[in-house]
Image (cartoon, rainbow, N blue to C red; front, side):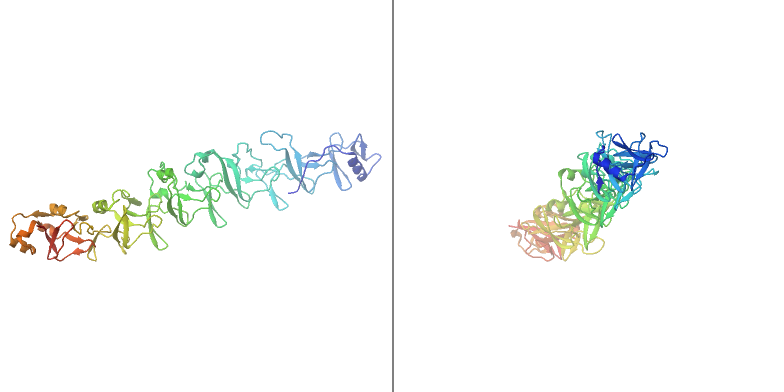
Length: 554
């Protein structure tokens, strides 16, 4: 904007001569120079006072003493005018007029006025709220006395808000630039503010809770009003194709922020008692400099304190996914781009090998890894976990997270195991429990004999399968030792050995035989009798596809 600065208040000799040249002198009426100033006499021969007089194309004002006013603001009824150092009424121009209160708190050195073609200063008129005025394509606002407003202004009161404490943004609806600018702000504006509430709010604005002195972004619509929410929730707005959210004072939120309208009534404390529905009330926005919402897609960040306090304190990041509305996937299985994923109740993507059941509107992950952190623990605890309704899934390693189906090699505590996960049906992706391709699986894990054992026995139980650690453990639980056996006993069992060649003989309990299977190192079920000798020299005897005995040779 082109604005005129304050002019000198005293008329120079050259200025007096210029005025005189433009004025018509009269004997009894008109202009006269007296004591270094100009006066105007009426037809009655009296000095004109408190009125305008014209000379040529210019208007001049005679003050209460009848002297021509110079370099001053004229209060004429309900209107304000300005006369310059030559006494000429200003028109179609900006003028900066010295502020008598300069130096006081929040007071500028001067105020800007705009005087129209008729000389009248633009004012707010009789409006109680802000009345915008367009000057040279820009919008401005003025108070009732013609002073240009600047800084934060409330829409309902055409007065500049005191921003000495840096918190005028809370009440301000408009921002009109600085004291020497004043143009209405439209679009984005970054301001340094003092925001005590945000510095202590770990839910609405946790990214800003370290210091009350903050730098925040605001957005002003085409009408100049800032976008803001209310005490019940944030206001979301699409700007240039991106989604943003603004709090009740219009400050753009960033990083984690909760939609408190949807979370109303939730009294959860940090990291405790969170269910999936609660987690879904959180949104993630980009940095304090960007702030656009992650509306759809993957993002990897440290969780909010109220989602997972432990990982928040450790600054441990995780993968999350937002739907098209910015809502977190939480406590559910979801198919994304043709692949299936699982999300914890706090929204984190599940990875690795996990036992999961759907319960109470979310996902219950059993003890995390502590019950299946090695192969032995897995074999021991998997049947009980299945009994409790947990199914085993594998979601890849680390950065992957996609649910695996079919055959998979899974590393547990540094050791690799073969797994099989269902490829169809309601339990697609769940580890198979049962026989497939003449092999036995428990919760997806292939029950194969160890390399050292060579052969091991698997027993089918009510809750799944139990694999005996070795032959000694098996015979102790499922067989009886026969002391005084004969050649006939050996023949009846299908053992082609002389009595003197057998040192120990164990006969498998008949009521257990139908539930027992012998597996080799490839996991295949052994169904024919042969040289089935394990790594400890125990020989397993198969008859009619049933495990009937175990013996040790001399």
